[in-house]
Image (cartoon, rainbow, N blue to C red; front, side, top):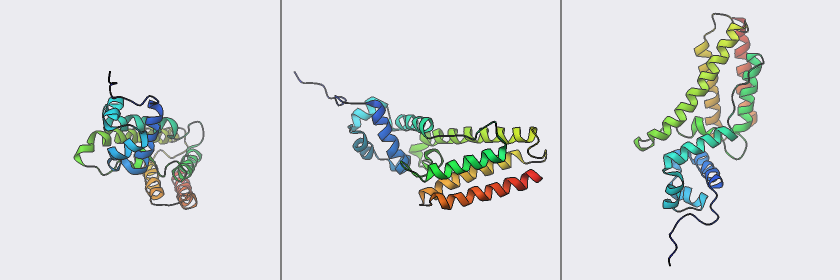
Length: 197
């Protein structure tokens, strides 16, 4: 009797997903070929599809794992300026430390072809969620009097978001923590100026 081909006996879906995440993080969605994903997970293409349905679904689950294990947001309960500096400094450290460089959500899928639109939408939704959180945090700072009522809430929140995304790109290009820390200092000066109105 012939045994049907299937997953390896030692197949661990969580470990396979973790290994796929590292491939996506390093190469981006389109750069992560099925061959690279197979090599990383130890699964054949049919086994990958049986386990995760499609490359897009595998990427979606990898993004969720990334957010659970490596994602972070701006802290509440402290003054906005302090929270932003802490947020950017953590980004500078995280983006320049192994296991990956940069942020998977910020830079893992920006320019894409037609075949990657579903995966692009996954990352866009995560970025939109982060921007909504930033906007709410800035609006709260205005309501508490930390920022003047004339503060541009949408503009400031998008600026902070753009700094995070830019830091991710620079980290992917090889910038180290010390270089990205200059951005944190510049943001601190910017926030002090905005606070004064």
